[in-house]
Amino acid sequence: MNPYSPEAISDIIAWYDANADRLPQTVSLAQGEQAHDVRKLVDYLLNIARHQGQNPTFTRNVQYLFDLKAQIENA
Image 1: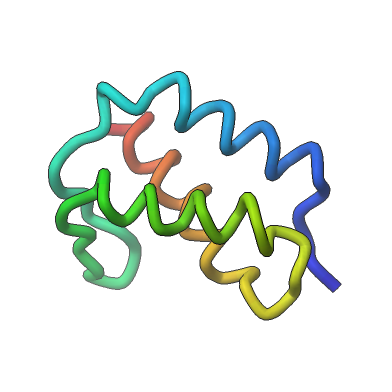
Image 2: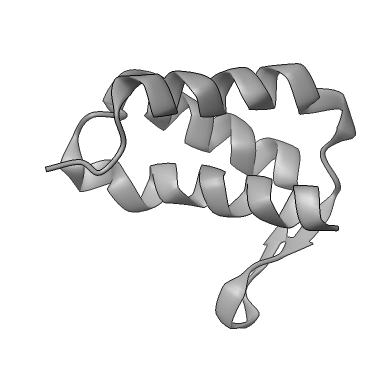
């Protein structure tokens, strides 16, 4: 079962659509992970969220959108 409701997925997609121009180039994630070329990564992840957001196989990909958003807002 996917932990993200369709509404939560729609909300995260809307947030990225509204904030696309303020995405940083690089973001540090948990456990020492670095996301480089954040815009390219977000485009890839948004495509997954739009087409497979309710598929449990892609839960971690959708989670990355929430993780990136939290890091961007806390920067």
